[in-house]
Length: 293
Image (tube, rainbow, N blue to C red; front, side, top):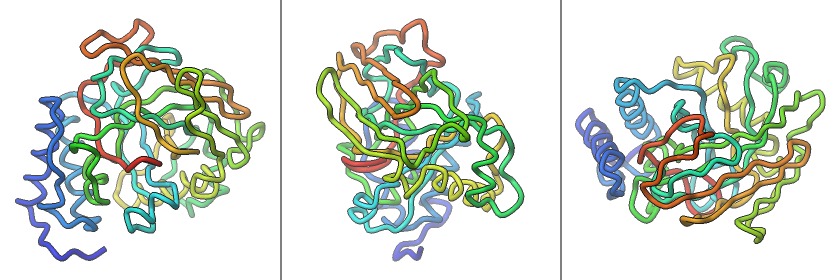
């Protein structure tokens, strides 16, 4: 993509510092598109890289990646023709049924996805559907808790990319399926908040097929010199609309063939439930608007 604004080192550094301050203070910030152009892909990923490097310097550990903007409707809204991606850290992980403090992720919204755990590296070869399909160890139902460090989710494409593609936290279910026994494209999804159905969809809504979404990600990751590796968790993108949540809400998603996955939100400041895989600081990040991060 081209940009009408410069994206020199100062602009990238200032944008990253703005987002990092929002994460550290728990106070959402202004968009960063006044520093980098709203459609400047190169600058936006440079900002993301700086924020990721800051977390790594603080001892965080990368455990996977997530894909966002897989919905055609949201791509049209943001005037883009491609998804984006972010990094998953170990302290973003929660266990099925955990209670997450409401303020663990800024401005949280939840979406249901198919997650994949890789059994082989995706570093060489064509990185096409067949190779990715063979590299997957298993699929599992997932809830992504998206967030935004940018106030009121007032985001452009550059804002969401810079802010780690909404990678706030995630929850994995307990049913594991190899792709010989589960077809992600055909999976039907229903997500409830309490007893109310708030989102429905299918695997076909995720770039046509969640496995194709992972193939896209594998090519992007290799191009950037950080290929996907065996053991990593890949959140492949929403199967239906994303929905905001409040303290006290309980969210459950049912994904055909993978069973259910659930999470609840406790009061702000409360400790995470004992079963949590990791604890999440106020590091929520921008990803999309109402429908898909």
